[in-house]
Length: 243
Image (cartoon, rainbow, N blue to C red):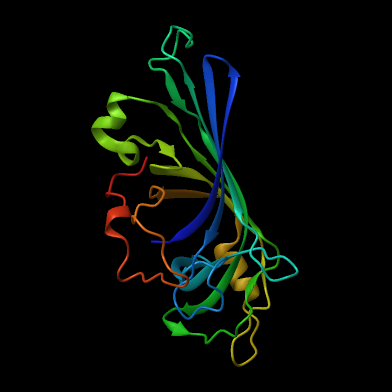
């Protein structure tokens, strides 16, 4: 589970007297665990298991890091969400089953992939600090919107139906393009950048995420408060089969 924090700016516009658009612009920051070098703009560590050269098992401990300004501040991930509603006087489009629609959400992010640990065929290579992708990886995600009062969503929830809104959370699917790695050396000086590139890097890697709803903990976490062993039960999505 990865905890994030976000600043949200909401704007309501009325293109017509009977039609309203609520535009939520969210600036999202990854949150690291206590003791990490940054409180924000850095993910908690996670493991990836892969096979190198067709036969060699590789386990890498990774982090995602957001780009930073010259002042060292993390560049946020911008998420724009729109819901549209019509007044109840017959103005809604004839193909709309209800008067409100949560539009699809598209998220595009640039994130560096850092490697903190590497085990090859069970052996810890004791990787030096500084191993990461030579440029930012690109992450493109899509969340499918839905109409208010959708009976399927109300009965099974956004996770099971594959829908998504920023406030409610739900299912996000897409791809990640991971560039080549560089500055990846073991304590003995061996360069394993090519090994990591051949194992992890590539274009069009499928990504599926279950996102919890906004403020699902019911409170703001303190700086550096993320504790994976404690988690946030109220915000943990139920387990459902992935499409």
